[in-house]
Image 1 (cartoon, rainbow, N blue to C red):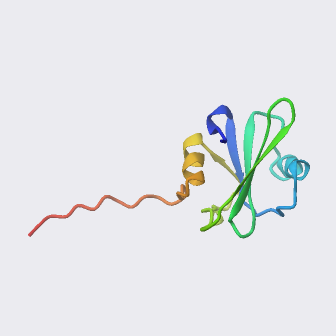
Image 2 (tube, rainbow, N blue to C red; image 1 turned 30 degrees about the vertical axis):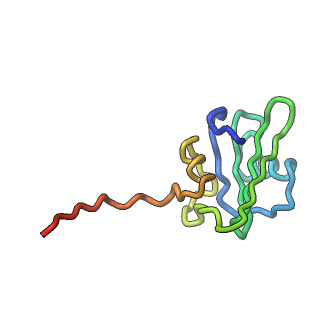
Image 3 (tube, rainbow, N blue to C red; image 1 turned 90 degrees about the vertical axis):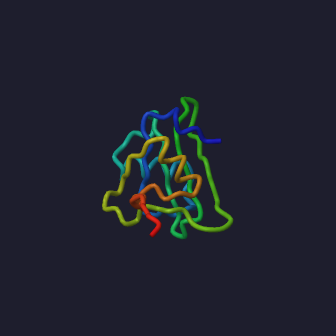
Length: 116
């Protein structure tokens, strides 16, 4: 299981990627497009166009680790409505995302009803 708490930062790359890319291609995106160092204690999350698969990339001081998740049903709630290409998240939000919640949607206000 992916443990988000062990990373200093968690980055989502918002544009969809070609999922044929492996660890070298994803590290290239991190360096060239995200302007970040792929060798830091960071976790990078990428999504495919159909939003049913994600890849996570990180460096563990011995090599790159590529983590992959494929949904059998449904789609990931990808933040395509946001303008930024790179989105920084905390571990709690990543856990919610991986469990199928939409962390970019604000919860509605609590409704109070009275009986008449």
